[in-house]
Length: 408
Image (cartoon, rainbow, N blue to C red; front, side, top):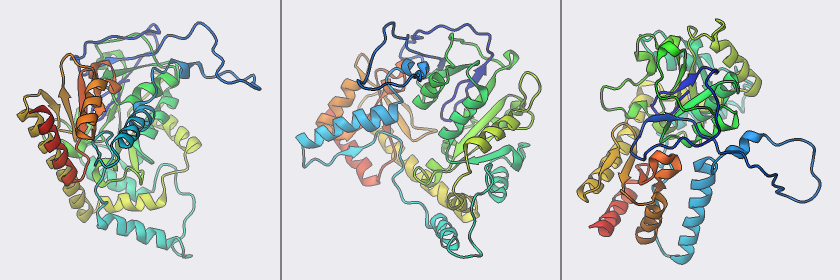
């Protein structure tokens, strides 16, 4: 299975032989699928002194290379560098264009619906407790009619959740450890680490086609940012309902990175090798491991899909796309090769022959701007930095001014 933002992924059959070693790819080979795990240590390492239980650690966790990029590297390692930088330059205006966290306020048409639902919980008439684990049916129906009209996706194919990343982990529980995940490089690091944790690493496989019986997981988190003829949903492709699952989220459309609301589509037509519906197993995992998304968040999601809410979300997306254009034009004018920035609010800037972390450090030191080292997304990202377009317009303009001062 390969998984990435608005990219497809596949779940390979379990007969692929396993090997625990890096799959090395050239830095420019963007989009190639890969599975990785670190070789296990031959010697036992004792991490803490004192009483030790007899419960063995999950050996797959020890295979992780450096931890999931965003919590361990970006939020910790990069945060440490940022904190040290602020100690060195206490009066500096540090601009963060690193992780893809939204910055603009949630549109009022959406927050007002959430507030109404919140206040309703203080009344006998408006109170509700546990809801359906799959999500409230009006919201599921609105998602189906808004994003999957004429694609054959029905409301009961949709599972509402607390975000696409959580659903990806739940899907991996469904598939278990006897399968092999294939993931493109560079990749959203959560895809890699969660696959390694589940023991789903294996031999690199280049060609993935329908005839080998794989299941594709398509993360459409940035579908509303698409500006060309690429499909917004994988279910626009004929036959996809028999081979694919799609995850999505309100995070980057409505500023729900903190509110937390997403969904996953598991079509009835998708079957395991024995003919059992994948959706029935996913439903069992959802109902076992999850009590459903917050009813307040779901009220916000339902408001997002009203005519006024959709218009407001398109305005939010347009704002971030304008930020992206500003960043792309800045680095292009400076003579850099720039990638991305068309169908997602991220700009990849190439620094041939240089370490991503070295470039990150130079930019932070000389411009007080936080970016993301491309190598944090896998070997294919080495030599690049990723600049996020999630930011206030004034910060984007100021950061680009500083980039020009540094590289002119």
